[in-house]
Image 1: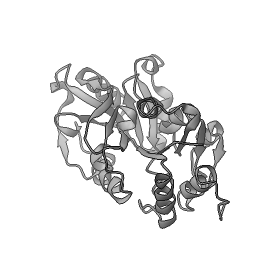
Image 2: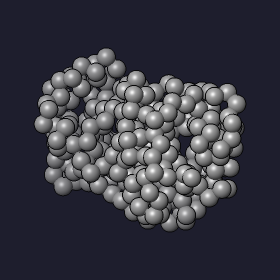
Image 3: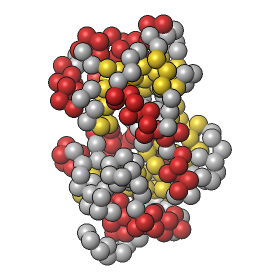
Image 4: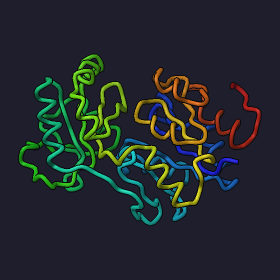
Length: 274
């Protein structure tokens, strides 16, 4: 029996209109009524997740949330941080210099200033809009080396970002967890941060073994948690690499894929539309 379900948000839980469908909402509610822990696991900051947590009634002292791609994990009700591994100003400056050399843009999340960028781009504006944040424009070279940075990002048009990824120095992959969370977002995290580590922190906190964990996602930043889970599920709209590592492929985020998987594996129903 599965006791924990971790759900990516964008491209997984949310449909193309950034909404949770009625069927998906019902399946999650039924799973929770049966005592299954449901966790949202996103690259978003917590502020960009609150409305969906409230919509799903995941708000109590018994609920947990994974945000910033596992850099931070917290109790939803109390706000207690149960896991945190972040970067610093030195890393943000390195990413900004690298982005400048490659002719792409960058932004980062500071624990003090929020969403920061040396130069506002359309992709930083997308980040701000999705998460309901304000943007602070600032020169990263002015950051102290020990300034608390949660994650830093390179942002660019998909084709340009793909070329940038291919050109990254190999040693960077030893210094950071580097994941692509969207066609235009490349994220640099602490090496001890990823969604798999974050889900494991929650599972260990609740004494749930990995074999009783389901994780669902659609992109590269979901790979660690899909590999960790007893059952890793990719969406039909997922990246091809994500599908290859999954144990099961459900329907797309516009076809109630999350609901179909919960009904099949957690609620033991014969799902319609599968």
